[in-house]
Length: 120
Length: 113
Image 1 (cartoon, chains in turn orange, yellow):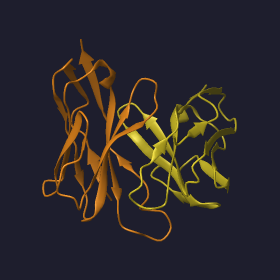
Image 2 (tube, rainbow over the protein chains, first blue to last red):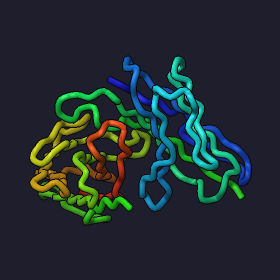
Image 3 (cartoon, rainbow over the protein chains, first blue to last red):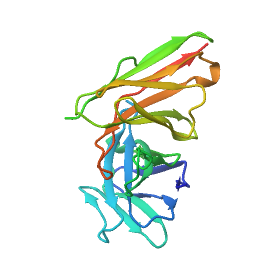
């Protein structure tokens, strides 16, 4: 079974600074997807960024980028120019790309989350 | 925009009551999920469904059941609510294609007293 580990329960950053959130995962599969989700205090879980394991290029979405190290099974999220609205719980998640009968590979496996505080 | 709607944001139920949590999505997604979120434990999958009337157990199905009679609706049922089921419940949906993004509802806060 796959596992996802976020080793930082809490992080803080000054507004306009850069912060990196860590995520490692364990899998025996070679093809999969990785995601970072953001959950602000309103509780709506929002997709921040996703990475396909077969792509070597790191995904980028505006101020958000990832450092995907497949061999090390590491998937960190970098937030540049942090804003007050970035304050939230961030979850790293894994999803298999293998097609299986039924739906067993469609689920997301989540880490326990990192609570990010942005200080003005 | 994709919309996943959970009918109740906040519920308070008594121990032993039967509880229904309803979720509706408007994007014709094949897959639907129920997760439970607890502080320090992250999100844990309770059940998911990949088609109408099809369901599979997730990581923590004990004490829960589900129903999916129509493609757009996925219900989570607590047959006899207990205090350890006090939690935030998140519904989600996605297309079947394995790489597709999963979309979440706003969550239902259930307190069992």
